[in-house]
Length: 395
Ligand SMILES: *Cc1c(COP(=O)(O)O)cnc(C)c1O
Image (tube, rainbow, N blue to C red; front, side):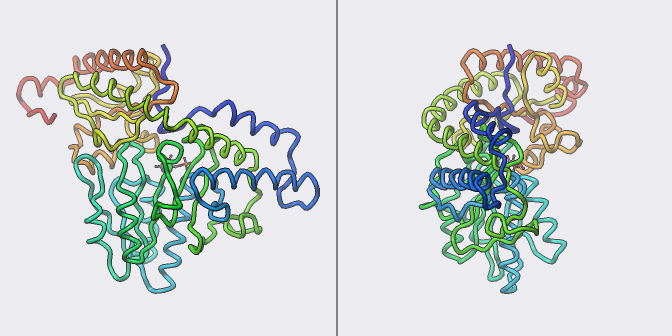
């Protein structure tokens, strides 16, 4: 059996999205900035895609700026809010410890430019406390940035409450919604969010394309200077085919969302129940407030990388934390932030399900993870010491 359980890293493009993209790689190749027919054909497709995306999230087309993906949208959102803050001498930003590196590293860069950043801790189940956000807001706070749903442990943050607090204090609020758009219901006509980032390849669109929502009146600063594309907010000839495919993919996932969420929540429960039977393990993240597709466990006495590779041999494509941190020996910053000790954080496994997942697949996952964990523990010196009582079990 082959199971792709790494949908938080990227998703398979939908057939409809591929079909929508193909003409733009072939016959419809005009530059949307050109005034002739071929250009206007591309321009129409681009603006239709913008309208579709805006409608999907109940925003207006002018509030949607196309980017090269989630990382660029995060960078631009944060840098734009920082630029607005600079104008009035506000150089303080509030965020939290479990953000994606696209957010954390942008904040680090701003610190080097004279900004001050408060990174809030999260609870043991990976949730940001809105009261802590309120307590962290100061006179000179220009931005609060808290992700909608976490890419590693799937926890869903209290975005509406945090947004209301920001509103009450007149502070801009950005949310990295890359894991949420297409997966959770989002209504920007009601949600108190000023800036929101999304990426197509997380909802069955192509890689290298995404968008930044900026509420009317919130001025975006271009990261890329050049032509007047995207109303001067993002220079460069638009990736028309990818943008069109993104709109098709978003519409499709949102239409299917109620059914998908119900189905995946049931499969997730089955998987969590099955994996919980493995001795000395723990679920990471909140049991309820999590993405329907996300399962993340720590298994004591093993290395996540070995687990991953042996599962790969059995046809299971999983992840141990975020794809961006693999290749480095540091355990996931998210697992450390929820209080997992280093030794435990190293033995993590993330399974992120796709819409086509089945019960049989969940059972295959449970059986194989249990076997591989037991096999790896069989020759782990760490596990031997734990069993001999030389070191105490942490889970
Ligand atoms: C994938 C991801 C990103 C980065 O998006 P790209 O389009 O790959 O640049 C940012 N934030 C979160 C939460 C993500 O999951």
